Every structure is written in C-alpha cells, then in structure tokens.
Image 1 (cartoon, rainbow, N blue to C red):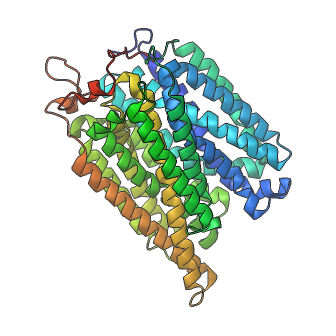
Image 2: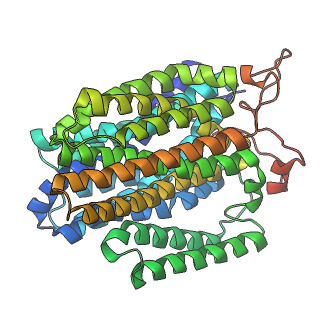
Length: 508
C-alpha cells in the first residue's frame, strides 16, 4: 500500500524531487575539492587552514546524522526535509558571497548541518512512499545511483564552474535548485505528523552521540596533519569512545531512547551497516585516490578527471536505474550485494597495478567499468537491507544510522588509506623519483580499498538473511507482501521489542 494521498506518477515525481535534493547534498561533498586552489588564492588560506573548508562541512554533517533522523521520526520527515533544504540553501548563499575565511568556514559548517538533516530523512520518505516490493526496488535504485554517482559528477561540475565562472558559483548554483526542491516538495508531499507520537526527544542521548561523532570526525580528518599517535588524535578518539559508551548506557535506561538498541538485534540492519562501513571506505579510496592518481601522476586537468569518471557514472546509472531492481526481485538481497562488491573489489585491484606512465584505455577505464558495475548492482540491495526490517516509526533513525555508517566508514577508511599511502611514498623517495614514490603510495591505498570491498562482499554474502521462498518476486501467489515491501519479523518478533507502542502508519 502506498500513501493514500499520493498516487501513480505523483510518487515518481516526488522521488525525482527528493533525489534532486539529495544530489545537491552529495555534490557538495566533492564539488569544493576542485575549487580549493582558487579559494585559497582569493581568500588567503594557508595549506593548513584550507582543510577547514572541507572539514567544517564533514564535522557537522557526520555529527548530526543520527539526531536529524530521530527528529524526523518525532516531528515529521517532510517537515525536517524542508527545514534541512532551507538551511542548506541559505548556507550555500552565505558561502557563495563569502569574502573572508571565517564566514566561509562558518557557512560550510551550517551547510553540513542542513545536509545531515536532508540525508537522514530522505531515505525514510522514499521508503514510505514506495511500500510495494517491485516499486521500492526501482526507487532505491534511483536513490542509490544518486548517492554513488553524485560525487564524481561533483568533480566534473566543479571543474566546469570554476574554469568558466569562479569558485563562488559552486555554491551559488545550489540556490535555484534548493528553491525548486522546496517548492516541489510542498506541492507533492502531503503534510504528516511524526510517527513517534507522544515521545520526547532524548536530549542526553542526542548531546552525547552528537558530541561523540563530531570528536571522532575531527580526530579522523586531522589525523594526517596532527599524527595518528599524537596526544591530540588519541585524546580525541578516547573522548569520542567515552562519550559513545555514555550514550549506550543512556539508551539502555531511558524510556524513549534516541536509538533503540534492539534495532541492532535485526540481523539485516546490523549486517548492512557493517558492510556499509567497509564499502564506504572502499568507495572513498576509489574516488579520491584515483582522482589524485590521474591529476598528480598522469597529469590530468580537473575537467579531464571529471570526464574520466563519466564511464563509471553511466554504468552505475544503467544498472542502478534499471537492471539492479530486476536483479533484486529475481535473486533477493544477498547474492547481488555480494557479487557487486566483489566485482568492485576487482576494479580496485586493477587500479592497484596502475603504472606511472599509464594510459586511460588500459589502466583507468577497465577499473572504472568494474567499479561502475559493482556499485550499480550493490548499492540498492545494501540500502534495502538496512531499512527493510525496520518499524516505520524508526525509519528515520535507521536512515540516519546507515548514513552515519557511510560517513564514518568513508572518513575513517580514507584517512587510514591516505596515511598508508603517504608513509609508503615517503619510504620510496630515497630509492625512486617523486612521481614513482607517489604512485607507489596510491597503489597501496587502492589495494587496501580492494581488501575492504572484498571483506564487505563476503560479510554480506555470509550474514544477510535470505528472503523466504516467493519473496524475491515481491509477493506470494495470494498477493501477500514480501519482506522487501513490508518489514519482516524475524524469530522472536524482535521488531516489536524495539518499541512497546503500537505500530504507526506508514505515511511520510
């Protein structure tokens, strides 16, 4: 059953609008990277201070995902989505007109907050709009393509805007998009109350987990500069772990927890989030390290780097928007997820052998093709697995958790792999030239990413709960909904243990 106020094509129009909002958020995580040299020259950033143009966004984005998801459950996903889009759009305006370092960094932090809210509740809105198995698989394919391909599109768009106009326009381009998304969401999405009626926000839990995530992100993104064994990094990580422990104690005792711990007794939810951490680490390694390889080793310009990612984007689009949904309906979640991640691991392994004098057709394109294929197939079943067993009253929370897993896995994985690459390059300088040493470090990072992706594929293949007979087709012969269309109840009826209250309706 779909939402009674939304019928036919209107749901698909709403999906397009929601994905456009998500794309704006995803693009902003990478579109800035190409423009950093121009920003530094214009506003006088040093190499050390320039990282805060990126880190300020990551800090608030990663720290507020869980809070944003739970606020959506309590007060309504549509209301929070509109608020997040408004905040992000206004912050983009402030970034675009920024004439000082402080204003730009502060506006980027606000952008991260708005982006966290949008990312945390958008998946819940989509899951509640599409409750029938076949349509949900197609809708999640569209969402997965936006999430997986948006980053590389950002590099291309960032290069175009910076070269043709100025760095200010990488932020100002968000204004018409944000206004359009807001207006269309008001027109297409019906207003609805939150699912978690009668509950109060778990303030103590919100403060501890947000502070824990922010400290962890801060430690990770500054690990290379401060040193991974420095007092600052280790102290911040210890403080983050202490706050996380306090959060878990609070959640076990409070009447209305921010994150019901019983959620992780659902095997698919727990497995999908572990897989998401590993896969995000591999994806970040592919995207960022391959961009550096093409720029610093092969000598590509920013626009050429964006074009080099185009084959992967097109392949991801083809599989995510069409074939992936049919594969899920035919084979369920487990086999497509495992196969896609293992194919992506093979693509990263090809990059791990890329030479200094490599060519696009031989050393770049094959890996891009495999990664596009793997990401296009795997992303849809991974998101479905993370959300399919969850009570509608906790859908925003589950969305926030899986987004947090991606954020933290990607940030931590990239920081670790970048550190390994830097250490390898430094060690090779004595016996090889600068470019060869740099390339040696990148190859080690690609190998690490391939290992992460292979581990994710094996865990998903071994631990995900397979669909029962008949569920892969979306319904049994009598029309009963499958596990992909309604939340499944594992042994022990664990979903009902998460919340003692009656199940809320599935309207967004």
